[in-house]
Structures are given as structure tokens and as C-alpha cells.
Image 1 (cartoon, one colour):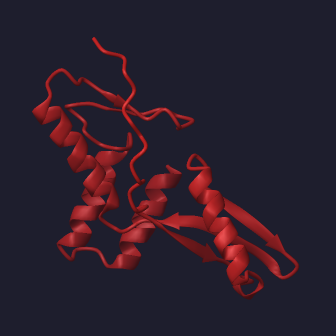
Image 2 (cartoon, one colour):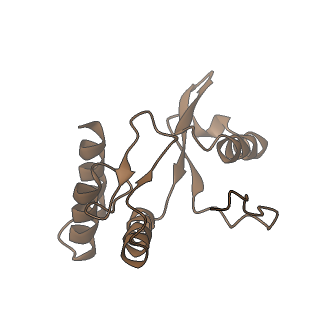
Length: 142
């Protein structure tokens, strides 16, 4: 079996997130600081977010992904497992609590089935966007 590394010289794909800043002192973050914070999140992909401490209070800095982002990841896992029976698992290495997606549970998270059910309920109109966000937050804390 070949151990050759794939050529990674092609241009990186457009990133799937935008920066999101929240907090009572957003006016303290100017455009140059915002761009620098965005670049930090691009460079340190393993960092979930930052807290900027200002003289007027804290500002949280995180990545904001489109609502269907995780669904797309789950679909890709499912596609891999369906099309390549030699693949029996895909493990996330950059996590404190590594999760392995498997053919029986093709989800990006150990709580993937629960996240998927929230997404599906929101898509059917059974949850408002605010209720879906609240459900995500409760699930993330559990």
C-alpha cells in the first residue's frame, strides 16, 4: 500500500464559516482587530473561540457556521461508508473527547443523532430558529 502524501499545493477551499462577535462591548472591536481575530481562528482551527477582554467588558469571538453545515458533514460520512465498505470508522483527532463516526452512526458528533433530529424538526417548521438554537445549547451542555 502506498504511503505517498497527497499534494496539498492547490488553493484552499473557501472556509465554511464567518466570524461572530457577541457581547456588551462590540463597539470596542475595530475593523483591524476583527480581521486579526478572524485570522487567528483561521490559523488555530482547533480553537473553538476566544474571549476578548476590553475596558468596557468581554466580547466572545466564535465561528458561525451555516445551519446546514453539520448536516452536510453527516451526509458526507454516510456517503463514504456506503461507497467504501473498507472504511469502518473516521475519528476526529483534534477533539478532547475523540468521536468516531461509523457506518451505524455516521455523525460528526457522539450526539449527532440528537443534533440531526433538531435540524430535521427545524426544517419541518416544528421549531422556531430561537427554539432550535436553545435546543442546540442544551444538548451541547449535556
